[in-house]
Image (cartoon, rainbow, N blue to C red; front, side, top):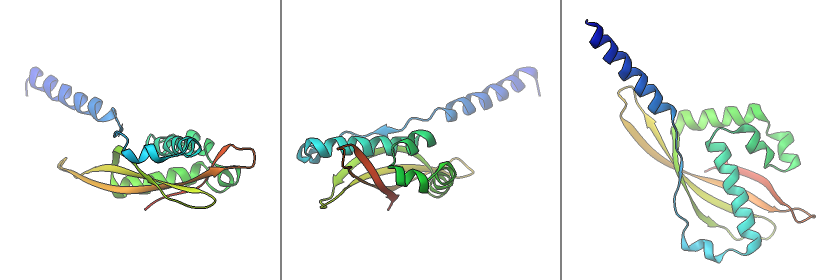
Length: 153
């Protein structure tokens, strides 16, 4: 193997590593359903979007910081890391997300998001899958937005 071919092989490996290290997760455009939300619900939806973004970007402190005090006690950094590991091993790396709808409920509002993932096999063939992410949001007695629950469906 010549020095040039060794250099080319090394450059190809480094380029592949650099490209795969850059992860961009796109938020798709909002749907007409956004126009139906009240100002209070719009604030809750944005809060739920921040929660989802923190999860997708592997930002444990940002994610936990958005939870209600009761949820913070129950769902710490260890649970965050385990949950994210299970999701990414099962579904792959997140590549995009979009808002779907808010469901009508008396005390809290469930906000539904669609998340698209890509999973690569050993030959770098890509397989896409989607999952729904539900965030249960409301307002506390002070009027502040709180997250009282979340899960992938």
